[in-house]
Length: 125
Image (cartoon, rainbow, N blue to C red; front, side, top):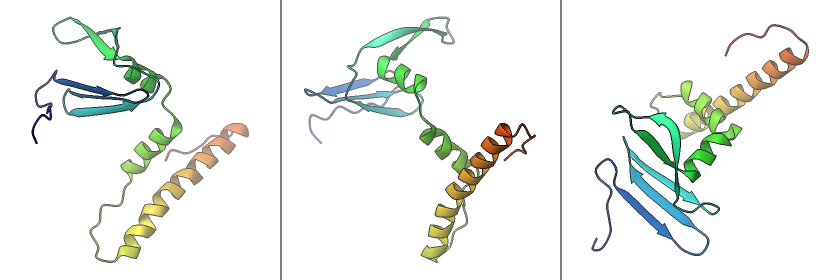
């Protein structure tokens, strides 16, 4: 495609914006995309250092995402640990296990919350 900037090497950056929406795309170890309505493409210096001892700059959208990340991302992460990886031709088996894994996680989280409320010792997942 003509005129399309592609990020290929570490440090490449592409920012697109209109009145309300900002899309930030850059290459670190892998390609990272951020789509935001409340941030611009400004960056902020952090207290972390890279291998060479230089201070690391991060986009404010990434800093806020890491600070206020919700439980949805954590539950997706926990489901991935026990994901069903068996290949099958039956679509209904895939659907069953796709729905079963989050249900199992939710039951464990409820158990953990009630065990903490009753001051009982909970078992690990």
